[in-house]
Image 1 (cartoon, rainbow, N blue to C red):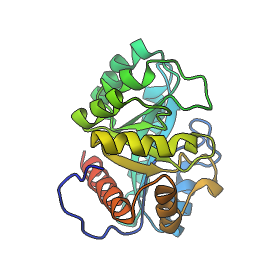
Image 2 (cartoon, rainbow, N blue to C red):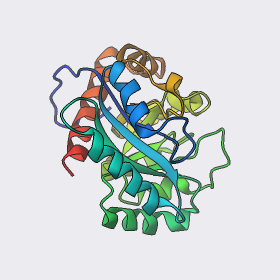
Image 3 (cartoon, rainbow, N blue to C red):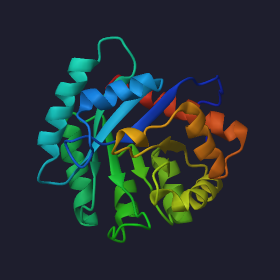
Image 4 (spheres, rainbow, N blue to C red):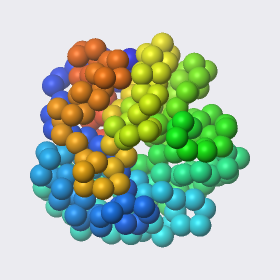
Length: 230
């Protein structure tokens, strides 16, 4: 697995860059999700509600207001983002471009998970766009993983039931390509949030060595800090 800087200082607390609120299909308003994450020791929290062409501007506006109201020094730092979901592959690049022009710092695309009828070609279209994370990419190919490496896009190890079915495949394919990984919860409810220990176990269960797990969390912190400055 790729290490962004070649260093491996100890990472602390939890970084989760893929969660959902009432602004899409989550159960909580942003402030409550943020508070529950705070109690679990989160350092950075990305809220990436599901969007398509019809709602991405409105959802980002709401999440930006939430971030502005909550980011006053206490962790977790809330990063407002979007997850483009079930968008026809041919539309992904243009929608991502429009979201970047709007100022969206964190963009995730809903990958080709085994448990939903995601359109074939979504992974590749997403990796050819200006995104940060390809979530639960399912049976991602070696060529797609190499593209993620080339473009600096993170591939997700998912803690969410169903989406996690291919975590082992994602790890093996990413390792061979040298692509960077991140663990996210894809949380929709309070019980979906996890502790640092649980996140490490998810990563190890997917096949990462203890050293690779530490690399993974350090990479996630590098990404989170970069997004927080945008």
